[in-house]
Amino acid sequence: MSSHTQAVSSFNRELILTAVADSFRKLSPRQQFRNPVMFVVFVCSVLTTLLWAQAVAGHGEAPTGFIFWVSIWLWFTLLFANFAEALAEGRGKAQAATLRSSRKDVIAKKLAGPQRDAKVTLVKSSDLRTGDYVLVDATEQLPGDGEVVVGAASVDESAITGESAPVIRESGGDRSAVTGGTRVLSDWLVVRITSNPGESFLDRMIAMVEGASRRKTPNEIALTILLAKFTLIFLLACSTLLPYSIYSVQAAGKGNPITLTVLIALLVCLIPTTIGALLSAIGIAGMDRMIRANVIATSGRAVEAAGDVDVLLLDKTGTITLGNRQAVAFLPAPGIEESILADAAQLASLADETPEGRSVVVLAKERFGLRERQLEADHAVFVPFTAQTRMSGVDIGTRSIRKGALDAVERALEANGSHLPPLVKRMAEDIARRGATPLIVTEGSTALGVIELKDIVKGGIRERFAEMHGYQDHHDHRRQPADRGSDRRRGRCR
Image (cartoon, rainbow, N blue to C red):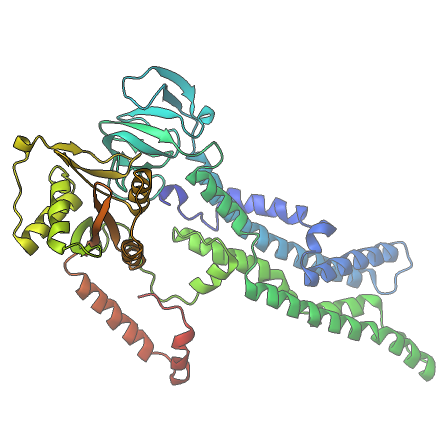
């Protein structure tokens, strides 16, 4: 999220007025029944109000003024609890409203096909469906989530993702996804829409923000059960005082029994009213604090886990790594020499001008001394990467070399009546499990092996990590000795 979802001030006049109005709306029995403690206070408030009306009519069990002020304090307690909850919920709704305001129904250039020069029809973005193609020129807003199928452009994503600088989005590779609501700054894109109205990234974000306030944390649920038990115990204890008082007065022959107003005041003082009143507001406030830090938690358990985190490190592309993957290893298939795999990988990457493709050429040259070859005489035909095939390569005479994603290569081999060796598939899966990127290289219907691509860490990052370790060690030394053993239980992200 970005400046569109900046924190809403607690003292916003409109927010407070809305919370005050919601405080009275939440006085309905159905709303109060969700909180056992406050439901008891609600019943007591209604009862004392009736006793005050009876006293005004001249049949009061206690002085009219005393009953009136007890009733006022009980209603004030209820309204305060409702106000705290409404204010916390209002902040979340304000965040969602701010996000919703950034979602606009724009006019889209719908194309008859995935070509820039295809017939154009002007439609509203709300009329677009999955599979439609749209043309987005410079300065125009993307009408929906999609995938770039033709073109490359600089896109401003700050309104949605908070990316401080424009990013390049182009067809093919892992930079083809675009988000509705972002703006094209230069060039043009042909985008295939991948989400229907109401299912976009922004819609899901709004739904999470609005629904977050209603998700109780596990500790909140457990505490609610504990408070309900305490309330029941004190309710039983106070309910026995009236018959004991009547019996004592009758046995002594003098005095007056304790009044219902006094018993109600005693009960409300004994039960955990304050905790019960603020419990839901505290849970919602935890979610709100995360939203203000541009973090959306999708469960109550995530909110509690965030409370145990000392340092949160987000590896946004370009923060720790350079953002360009580079080839670091050739892993040949059984019976294939590594030099043969490197030769085929380099041939398939000669026309690939991406940092990944150039790194494959450099790695083959460093490992086996393979130099770039002049292939025009051999009538080489390079096959560019497309979002549909997710493969690229080269055809040289009878040789057909391809490199691409695991699932794409696997489908291509099966279409040719072959299959991917289990060991090669296992190697690719192991690489992906380590956080790297595998590319399968094939020649004809034979799998030659896997290229391993890794993100390159920026210079100076180790020193920054050392600074964070030093900060954490200083923080640990300031703790009490008895608390140091709890580190294992704390979610410390470094």
